[in-house]
Image (cartoon, rainbow, N blue to C red):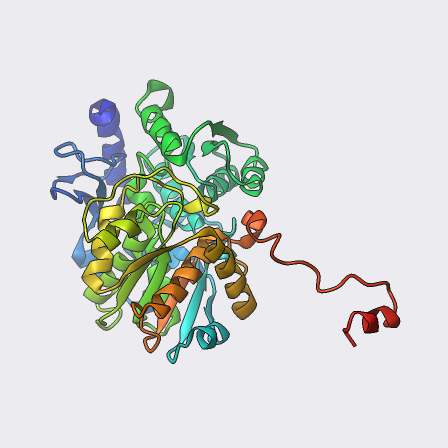
Length: 432
């Protein structure tokens, strides 16, 4: 790796002073367990495996419920459990987090639940997706590490968030997307005024290009949030687990269902639950984690169905473009999280996804993008197949706003009637 020399050393030295009281203690390889100092590094120098943040358990154990509850009404209330932003002056604060946890009684009735069913609605974040969580942490870390420009490879929601956050704090951004992305997501990214590059190819092609660019001299001052600062970026998803536990009165749900693209979000929710138990913020519980994918891009769910640890890359198709990562980096870890908790995975086709979007909207008032349709449809499928227990309290994650993917359902819903502006017209339409 080009940055193994001077540049990484400089960033690590800078990080050592910047992170100060942070509970983060270093970078740990998820494959071989090798450890490295905190810095802009995402792959192990020993085995090339992915790195994640390691924490000092004594520092984590100092965090109390009272500390968290006294914090800001945003994801930064959990700063004591995150690798960046321990100093309020360095945080990228956009009001991200503390999104609604909605009790979905009508949906529960439709699906035969006898236990509470909840929707964690992350479409309420500033750019209307959960990506504001990971970006807030990643850009905060990037600033603390001395980077001056922000970049990413994205299937849409991450592009929206990076462009918005960068302009909010006055940093340059350069965002790379597949050229066939939904028009609403393209517009929402471009409107913020940063550099937007459409690449002729799939997300995996875009990600490969960004990985190569991150190693060039021209991009040495650029933080690719999901490449060279990925270990910090991924930790932002833990706040989805922290918030659910706090919103349930400091207890864990018995089951959670999460959509999977790379598989990272699901693994970090599981990590958050385990951390909360280990430091005594919640009681231990035999919870189960379930994963949801689109049939057009289901390499992780297929590996689960095949009973293998090998995730075979696929060429993505289908309407759930925000989940279309054909070579998911965290696939093996998502499989481990689901299997170790006794959960399951499933995938659903485009028609089931559209029906899932409509079902969630009709029963909860939450209009989800296609990823939320995947999660709702998989929830239904898992209940019907007996793999998910409707007598256990369950939380499903909606990760984005339906206004981003209107084309998916625009032909399914129309005005109930079109009438002249008269009472007679109302009667003729059977509305009186």
